[in-house]
Amino acid sequence: MKLKQVSIFLENKKGRLWNALSILRESGMNIRALSIADTSEFGILRIIVPDPEKAKKALEAGNFVVKITDVIAVEVSDTPGGLEGILETLNKSNTNVEYIYAFVEKKAEKAVVVLRTEDIDEGIAALKEGGAAVISPEEVYEL
Image (cartoon, rainbow, N blue to C red; front, top):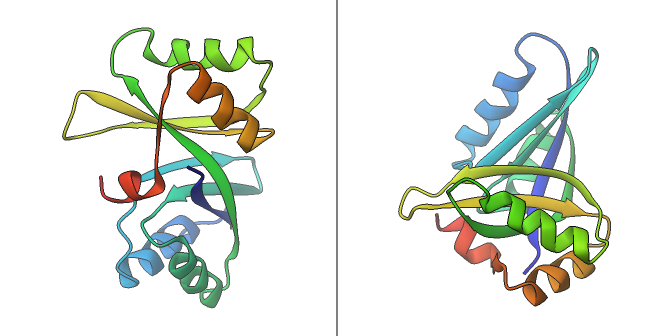
């Protein structure tokens, strides 16, 4: 149930984000989710795509520094408090969340939260034990 996330290190220069996204488009990659965090000198673009290895190879060929990491996808109610319940489950199990981002699923009234915990296996176990709907990579890639 570990989802592969592609992280791209971007210099904070005009056109670098566009260049990375152009490479993904040319590779036929449809981005399912994305997040970008930046500082004054660089940023980290985190994306979920159906074929992470293909995206990594294409981006590296375009001179980007790329890393694939494991994350967790969880379905939550798209209502006030939906995310809070997931975080409460992780908090009760003493599992630390490193970062989180989300997107709304078009076909249902659910949101999908992508999160990374210090220990992915521990995070998945805690979420399942708490009754959370952990989503398989295949389900996320097909959204």
